[in-house]
Length: 336
Image (cartoon, rainbow, N blue to C red):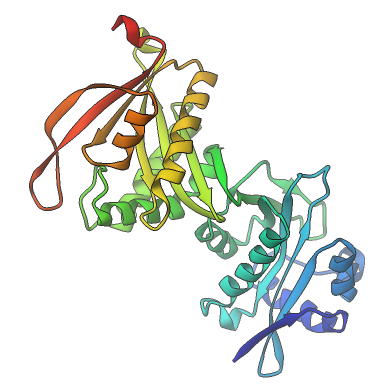
């Protein structure tokens, strides 16, 4: 049985051994504790001096996991806490200990006021990337060069505790696993999207990879919404390409995880859509929504105007056809 306790300075040798057991699985990684990471000799004191906290996981008297968190300096990122030193004995990978440790660190950071969580991970640690992406972290900012003996390059991952963010191409691609899970859950729940259940994971992944390509090409804006540190909502703005419609964009794929508060996330997502569209000169927005979807009620209450109802617009999972509404919002509607 695994038990988690506060980390101690006396755990130094066990921490170093655990870190090396994880690092040694990747080529080109070297560990010079005294030359580059002397804080490992007294890690509890190190994080305590920074206002942070350190935990250790033990099983059968052996240290098998660790994690730490600390507030970032105001000059680095106000309200942000860094998740640090996330390591689990490779023999226990996939057993859920990493999730339990991350739950513990995130909960502590949020309880003491964190509004954003950030972390750094070596670009070679592909397994760690997949783990963080499942946990609603997305790539954020440029690659960091460490100039160490391992020639390390690091990705930054981050997420707000609550809020809406625009994803760049790297962020969009790293969000594919979580966005795919949302899409699959929405299709299974019968939300009005362009897929029928059961939706294969690879089909969902392909859909979001194509969206990421659109973001990279400057054709799309992808917004993501978090609630309680979980990426639970998204919407995409697709630019019209005709020369005569350079002021127009389509709002598509408004999705909220069925387990989340749909209205609480959908409303700010739609509000942010308008802000981001105006920022890039798109003043007329079109949105199609299925009859009865939450988006229909939001459009009616949010100042969107109905163009009309289209009967039999899309096939339902039960084989019948459902209707859809088309709404618009913007400064060019009065003359249409």
